[in-house]
Length: 153
Image (cartoon, rainbow, N blue to C red; front, top):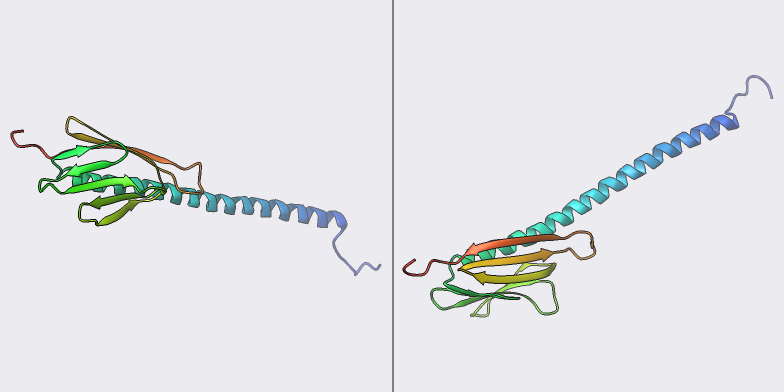
């Protein structure tokens, strides 16, 4: 070999490969964290949105209702004696709002626990949402709604 032929020595190549490996591993970890945190945040927002949507509808209807009965489902009786029912559909995790005309609206999905109680003209809704496939993400909420004042109050 002459002095004009130059190249990399084995130690130089090993050091270069090691440095590139460290850089790639840090970049890979950063990309993984960005994707994981974004997905986690998105799932948390979905669960929270489900609770807020349910609370909005129960609040809106509850403030118009003259009476209510609670338990695993909520039945509101409006001033015109029509009824609105909130319940998780059998065999699903969907919260439905239905009225006595048969109209039905899906308010929330991924509802894993729901309970209504009525005391002193206040409806208390305890609700839990957990997106499917993400067992470490749950959102729980307790919402209170005052029924419409009765005549004489």
